[in-house]
Image (cartoon, rainbow over all chains, first blue to last red; front, side):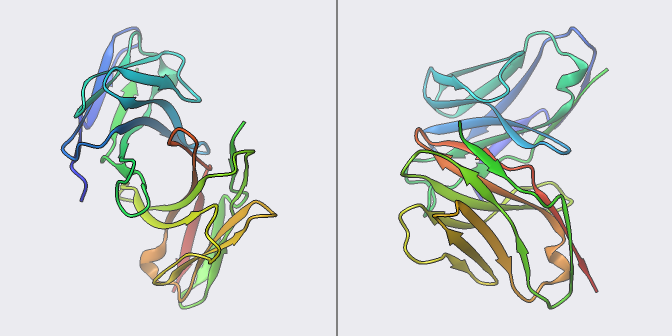
Length: 115
Length: 113
């Protein structure tokens, strides 16, 4: 299994508080991603990174920021959490030649509840 | 804009029968990759099968095969000889230029004994 760990795995917070989710990989893969999963919406790309300090927006980036200061770590920050950001967040990684097909490898997910 | 469509929110199949899960996509990129993932109730995402846009043959992986019709922009997953453990959510995904991956909304498959 690909070495991806997400923390925290579960978090309950209040509206307006900042939240940071961490994704750590031990595979030295170039690409890292943050997705959110909501019923009826599948997985939607929030932000992704194609190298250290190189990031770009996905399809649902409003209200989220990311940082990647090291190859192995990709942080997702909610500056001021809202109830609409209650979701399960998945981190994923991909190498340019990762796996046989360059597929995504996923972390176990982080369940965030914003009250 | 890139778009992935899965039109079947839920599907039922009898154990040991085959089932086809639909996926269509829309892109103007000539080079792309198509993926299927399985998500059991435990929540992890499991990679099943891959098809490259230039691949001439349909991909197969054990009981999984991908019915790739490029002109129709469809990449349906076929699961043969369904098993109870196949009950899960199934997601179609595309990899576009820049190594961006986008997912469909998923199909919930239930295998009936």
